[in-house]
Each structure stands twice: as structure tokens, then as C-alpha cells.
Image (tube, rainbow, N blue to C red; front, side):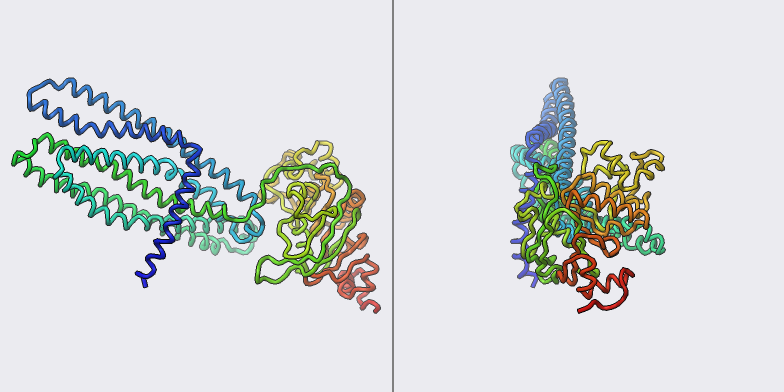
Length: 595
């Protein structure tokens, strides 16, 4: 069974290696000349070390002949100084380039993550996505420059050393290569283990980030439920998995490093034994044996560089695989903020036979939904939970694409609108009214970065947030906390509504926008919505029917279909579901409608 599967594994690994090397070149390519400079400096440093055994041989020969040593010692000193300076400067160039590679990868990845379609984000865990930006990109530092340069310098200096050693004595070189080949064959088996351990460790780090993000996303609930220990254990399990795989990788790396040293030590003993016999027989002078032994120890550096490059590649390949996985996720085109163009006034909306589900084999959320909103005014969507009301807004915003049918805004299929242009005419208030960490001002102008102070003050007064601003120590520059934790639920909703109104949208989408407001603020916001509906098209999702009884149009939805459209009085009389909803909320007597 194992034998049969081996060719398949090899066949699968080859494209993956090509893909990894191609991706690695893509990261290094903008910095290729800097990497070449670092490589040349590293080669100069290595050349100094390469020439030292020959200089030592010349020194021993000069001693044997009774000549002066001053010239050779001076040359050796200059050689050491030059190679040290070149190596140090080369290391700085490479480290700086490595940081630039990491920065470019992070910027690209962040831009990609923020453009992902919701369908892609729904399949991934936010914490795992964040770990790809943080810990995975960090691994590129070693593989993008040091691994490349170490592999190049290691290979070149190894070849150069072998050539010089062959020139010194071919027999001793043969002994060395046999020992190195035997140990190297065992080391080659270890390298894939390092890659596997690194990939699993990075996946576990992603799970740990996901667990922490999960906890901090509901921190108060965790504390109120006394679940700190349980959640700590959950995250701790991921941390332990990361530790386990990290230790396993360290074990294989240690074994690989030991194999490197073992090869040199065994070769040294073999060369010492064979070389001693050749010196005794007069086949080679003692200076040749000394130089050869020095080269043997010199081989440790290029071999170590090759081993280090192989280890870094295995770890980097795991990181690149996770980073490139993000590139394969569906993303929207690059967003460019675009204010409302020459078209002004309310936008019309029409759903024509729209069907939608989140994926093949999943149940339909919308089934042939059909309605029209001709222009200004307020249209409300009501119905039981799970009827598909909020999905109407998600489809209009093109967070998801319809499975069937089409949606028109201003008589134009939304798939024909540039995405930035479509969203620039829409103001959207989500059901949970999210507020971002930062200042109150930053949250208010989030959708309209060009809003003036006068416009901000006007919106604050309309949404009754001016009293909040007066109460805060730093006014608009007060910090609102993580996810608006320093604001009440009603204040967060009013901030979200103010943010949408500052955008001056032609189409305003309000998803349960007043659910957390008290009666006084709800009445005030109803007046604001009614005023906005005279200038724009307002679509409202509401479970609380008292907020929409005066709507120009009410769309009753149930199980993903539109069952009735009308005004409050008509629907109470003609639609049983709406009448039940109204009766439950004490808006009409609890009795069946006529007919």
C-alpha cells in the first residue's frame, strides 16, 4: 500500500515545489538586484575563508624552506579583515531586504483579505486569516533572502572547495565524498519532516488566533458565563498543538544539524587516517595534509548553509502555501471610493424572480422573490425570523451574488454597476450596528471621509447624539472602545444611523436599526427616517411593526418568498400572517382578517 502511494506523493510534491519556488521568486523579484549585491558580498566573505587554507599551506612550506613570514601574515590579515567587512555588510543588506519582502507580502495580503467576498470569509476563521498576515509572513524573512543566498553561496563555495581539494589530493577527496554522501543520504530523508512539522505548527497557531478572536468577540458573555477556564483550555489545546509540532520540527532540525557535524567529523577521521599514511609514504607533503584538513573543516560552513537553506525552505514553503491559499479565495475588484455621480435623487429597486442560496446542496434563502420599489418613500420588510428579509440587503449590496433572477437599481442590473459606484449610492445600517475601535469622529465619518464639521453637527442633532458628545470628556475625539464597548446599545445604533446619513445616500438600507432604542429615541429616529424618505429611497427590515405602520409599502416575506405587498391597513385585512404579527404586537385586535 505504501509503495503504491509513493509515486502519487512524489507526483503531487513536484507541482507544489514548482508553485512554491514561483511564489518565492515573485516575492524576491522586486528586490533581485539587492539580493544579488548581498550574494556578491557573501561570496567575497566566503572567498576569504576559501583562500585561508592555501595561505596556511604556503606558510608551512615557507617555514620548511626557512623563508620570511611577514608578507604571508600581512596578506592573511588583510584577507580576514576584507572578508569580515564584506560579510557583515552583506548580512545587513540581506536582512533589510528580507524586511522589505515581509512588508510587501503583508501589504498585499492585507489588501487581499479586505477585498475577500463574504462567501470566502464565511468559510474561514478570522483568527486563522489574521495569523497568515502575522506569523506566516514572518517566515518569509528567512526563506526569501537568507535561504536563497545561503543556498547559492553554500553551493558555490562547496564546489570551489571541492575543486581545490581535488587539486591538493584526489585520493583524500574521494574518501571525504564517500563519507559525506552516506550521511547526506540520511539527512535528505529528514528535510520533508521539517516542512510537515512547520505547516502543522502554523495551522495550530491559526487555530489559537481563531480561539482568541472568538473569546474577545464575546468577552462579556464569556465572563458572565464563568467560562474563562473552559475557553482557556480550548485555546491552550491549540497552543499545545503548536508547541508539539514546533518541538517535532526542532527535533528534525537538530538531527539535520547533527548529521552535518557528523559528516565532517567522520570525514576528518578518515582523511587523518588515510592522509597520515600518504604523508608517511611520501606521496604528499605534510603541508598538503594540513591544508586539506583545514578545507575539510571549512566545508562545514557551506554544508551548514545548505542545510540551513533547506530547513528555511521547508518552513517557508509551509508559510507560502498558507499565504497563497488566501490568493485563491474569491475577492472583489480593488475598491476605489467614488462619491455619488451626476445622478441625484432617490434610487429605484426591483427584484425580478430572484433566488439565492449560499452554496450547492444548501436550502434556498430566496425563492423567486419579486417586488418593485419605484423611488422615494419608505418600504418595510416584515415577517418571521429566517424569512430572508436581511438577505435582501446583502444581495443589493452584492455581498453575495444571486443564484437566479436579477436585481435592478435605477433600472440597471447591479452586476453591470461598478461595485464601488453601486455602494457609493447606498447607506447601510447593519442589524448589530457595529462600531469600530477608535474615536467617535472616526466612526461617524467612516462612510463619508470628506464630511464637514457642519454636516457632522447637523447629523448629531438629528440622531440625538449631540447630548452624548457634550457628555463625553473629549467630545468627538473620545475613544469608543473595542467594538464600541463604551457606548450603550442604543448609542451604537444611533452612531450607525448617523454614519449612514452622513453618506447622503440615494438608497438607505436599515436592518433593525431601532431595535435597541428607547421609546423617546425611537420616535425621534422615526421622524428622521420619514424625513430621509422624502429625499431618498428607504428600505427597512423590522420585527417591531410599530416602526413601519406608516410605511408607503410593506413587503411581507415568509420562507424566502414574498407573500403580500401593501400598506398596514390593507395587510391587516388581507394577509393572515401580517395580521397575526400585528395582533401579537397589540397593533390590532387578535382576530383573523376577513376573507
